[in-house]
Length: 106
Image (tube, rainbow, N blue to C red):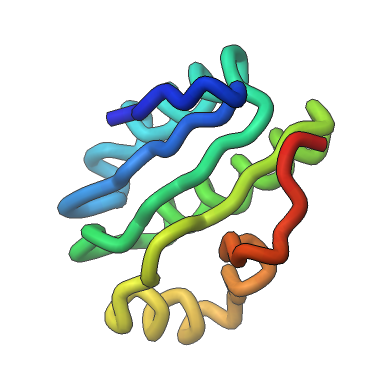
């Protein structure tokens, strides 16, 4: 569910599973956020499971942000099981993780 912030940013929190069963819903939620906000934060700290569909949505969200000259970050702690799975796919999400030194409001 998206939480609206006053600086044209939003945080979307994924919980449970981000897999093929929920991919269409998750993708629609991300695209809707890009229509209304300049900065989108994706909190996956409560995610229990992810498959390649979920990873594709994350990576395509970054591409969408870049094409629209908007900001996209992962926020919160990435659960170890999710991090391990993503790493086993030879993918890194580290460049998307928000840190206090990340620039906002581009």
